[in-house]
Amino acid sequence: MFRLISSALVAAALVVIPAAVSTHYSDRALAQATATDKADKAEKGKATTKAAKKKKRELTAGQKSARERQRQCGQEWREAKKAGKIEKGQTWPKFWSACNTRLKGKSA
Image (cartoon, rainbow, N blue to C red; front, top):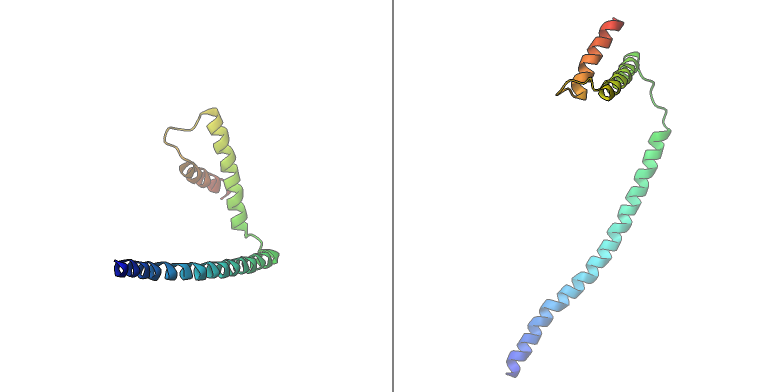
């Protein structure tokens, strides 16, 4: 009987001790990983501010006119939607495509 109990205690110790040790080391590894993540985030934040400080390139004439057409079509879309003049099944991308083509034709 004594032999059975002692072997059960040894088996339990063989399971519990490595688990306790690995928990200790995993807590330490977690703390180190967290510190590393914070340092990486701080470096990324510095890189983003450096990129933000760089002067942005000016838009080309085509980009400016495309944005203006999109604003105009967006305004028309909102007005037509409020007035209920949008056809059934009409979506913004379809409206934008037709409106953009129409406005490009006017300017050409």
